[in-house]
Image (tube, rainbow, N blue to C red):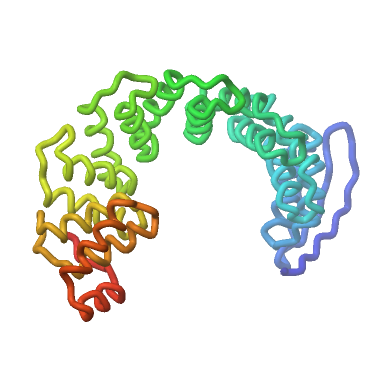
Length: 313
């Protein structure tokens, strides 16, 4: 941590403080209103003297400076320049939250939800998230949707969850797009609508959402809601299979076993079935026994040592 020489000659009138600051060997003399004590604090902060920075941010915070209040809350939260104290952090975040600061409302909700400096209270957490969500804060919108979906802190309501997820989906958030698609597919908050499910799973998959890719792989493999297309089933299933999605692994194995959309290859099929079977996929376990009767000992050994890092088609 850098050392800093700050020599303060301070007197207070009704509204003024004079501070002589020596930052990086360059003296600065300035008259500072009590509402702008962050000037002194930032001098210390820039020179990594967090302890002194905290002292001056606290002075400014007590005088009503919102930026300083946020920093004081954060410094108490992380223990920067002062002993970590979530209770005092919560006090300052809540003060800001009551004044309408969205990020502080979000933080207060989080601290209620995870019992940080305050007793856990999911209902109050939901209320604070909802306040921030109404101001289009994406994180809070996501939490409101999730809490409606799970029935945490509020009565479970799929219809309301869907409304919030859809707002986020339209903003382009892939997680929300995937959730909207899932809710259309499983008829949660909306009637089952395969066409809409496909639209939103595709949007999310285009942003590399792995779950959405897995679902599309399954649709194309089964021909569910789409024209059956094994090449697309392979293309969409490969990434999720590599990332340990069991059903995608099972699909990859079947494609290789039958030669659907890819050249038949029992070694690849056996390797993918082995991975799927490790997740207790009964079909995969059964097919391993079938393949063992068709493969040589050498082929099985090769499959057991195969690195499944295959090129995209």
